[in-house]
Length: 210
Length: 388
Image (tube, rainbow over all chains, first blue to last red; front, top):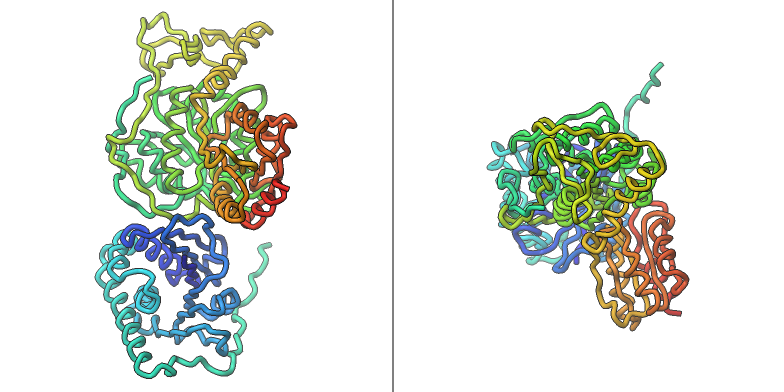
């Protein structure tokens, strides 16, 4: 059984990530995948997340407790959910949007500039698909074929091709990264030694309606 | 009562990845529901959204009403017009519906209400789970009456039990509740929708006799009266007042006795046909975990752990919560050491189990006020306490 949390800010397609992966494992990889998600204000702007439990048997407890995989696409979400990540877990993050803290326990770090890649392809909206491709390559929890089969119905039809290309971009990057790491094992991406100072959001407080 | 195959128009055959709310909508459409009136409320809104998207394409009607009172009232009218009807709501909306749920019961109107329960009372926890409307489902409206309530534990069961709810509503001319909760409603899982010809649908018992002889409240052999479609030329009267077989108000103790007993008896005397339980390893069990909905699913993990520890524990999962499986609980109470009843409220169904156990076996409740599903460890602790 694996517990996964996808996280970022509302609007990045974080809940879609959970849906696509859950559908892929449940319908095309012959496993059980139970997906739950953030509701309320957090799904609409601040740190939001979707949680997925993947298992070979029926999932009895639908929520994640100690995820072994955390996918982070924003600093806020990373900081909010990182403490829950298991000590032997895996962190997968967007290298431009998340500055990880110093290495904790046995956690493995894998970064991909997913949003930048998506922008290079024409639109940052595909960032979550680059991330999913990367996630698929690194974790091997779900087959890339299943992930692609899961896309129709969950992404707009006219953008299906672009979404698949974004997925492939992330997937190939992940495979390459793993191959490089095999050559010289210690060359894992090292997060910055100093923890970044998280800047408070600049936003005028909302005025009370009179 | 006529059994037919589902109308393929409403059946989205195949494997899907749906949340419980969507699955309820698909279950309703597969069962032949062609009229939906509702008012959006978290965490049930997705069902209404899906209906609004899908129902125009199967020849049905979706109306967003001004509130839940109007929603249930519209259902009663549409049901008498001959349609299969449903609505969906949660906590405060279910409270608003109560008066006319009583009207639907009194008028013996088949309809289905899905309640995606959230934490209460009042607006409570809109986005978080609860199972605290179980007693309200049974006793929420005034007067003595009986209804049917089902409790699914997964999106797949949301689909299956919504169809079952329609079949029961049509069979017994009674409101049927699908009592799910936020956790199941918002949980995505695989849902298999079978081909239409594998889905059994029960048609309403339509009256076939001469037009001037129709009596809307004359019980048939199974205690359920025949129905006609309003507008088909039958002259009939129906009312929320105490009425006789003709449906005309007769306001005295004698007819009240007949009328209310009829409403109650058609469910109580048919309870054995309605009640569905899933039992596991109950025969030589020392402890039986009685649960329903999402809690019954989480409880399995606790039961597995308990069995590993050598405890003889059986489970009774109530698919039907109302009518309550009184006889079965009574039977078990004489044979076991204790019942464990986990639920996301402060002991609503636990109290029912206690009543039926009649002091023969203690009932250990594992309860909390909602907002989360049980930690299986808490249920395990209660099981261990029960065998001591």
